[in-house]
Amino acid sequence: MRSRLATLVLSVTMLAPAADAAARPPVGGAHYQGRAVFLVVVDDGRSLSPQSIVNAPCDVPETPTVYSGQAPRGTPVRADGSFRWRTDFQVVEGRFSADGRTVQGRSRYLGRARDDCTSEATAFSGRLVRRAAPDGTCEPLSKGRLVVSVYVRSTGCTRATRVVDTWRLDRDCVTTSLELRPCRTAGRRCTPVSGGRLSPLAGAACPAGRSRIELVIREECGQIAFSLAATAINVSCATARAIGRGWQRRPCGVRCTVSGWSCVRSGKVRGIWRCRNGHRAVEIDPRIVMES
Image (cartoon, rainbow, N blue to C red; front, side, top):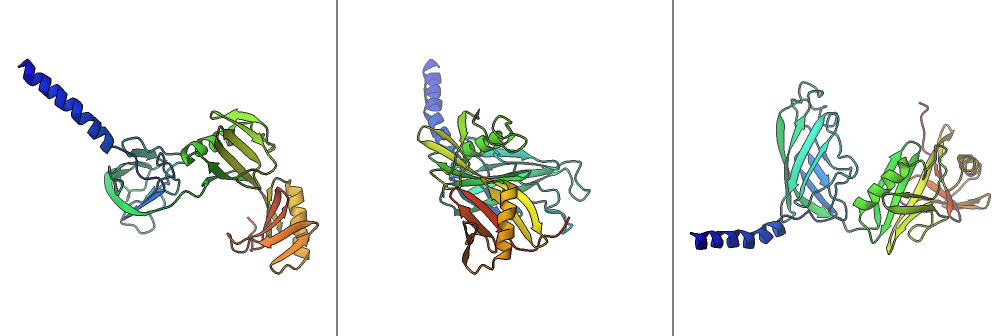
């Protein structure tokens, strides 16, 4: 009897590592898609991008995007490939397969949702459709008047998202008047910089050994005129508006100079112009901006 028990214990012990090895997070940068589901895993495979969403499979056509909330920033993917998020109207739970090729789960709509989206759980599934290679950038943070672009080296976007989110909320880092200060947040020392190693427009850097996170901080300055809006990078909104008005008075073809600032049309965003002076920049949107 003892011999048989010892054999059973030995068998379980030998099987345990194989089970643990099979449970691993999905591949970083993976995109999963299926009927009413779209999930994006960040570069390190440890969290979901806020682009991720599971839509409501309701009969009413206009419902799917009303009560289906995107995954909150930094939604964790556990070591066994499972994840969970909750919004005002929805709870989503799922798990990626051990080989990282598929995802399955259930979505439940809470009582606050409309009658045609009941509180019953609905199954969803998706498959791996593409994998994006890391490009040194992470999901930007948009909060209030600030839009923060995130650049990384030797660190994953899960950690970078945690750092930038706590940095933005910490009044020791960013004051109510949007002044940047040296601070320590989420285990990193962040300091204001005049341009960085990863981006020439970086306004703050959070290094840790060989790892580095840099932030490009854009402040939306609103309308200059009916058809013109400006965004400031490392300058005041007063300066941004002045450069915007100067650009408006001076016809520009592909590039021009306004008060010593070099202005070119941005290749990334159609219609946007960027005027630079060293580590400072002003982005000008000449498209119609309607009065609120």
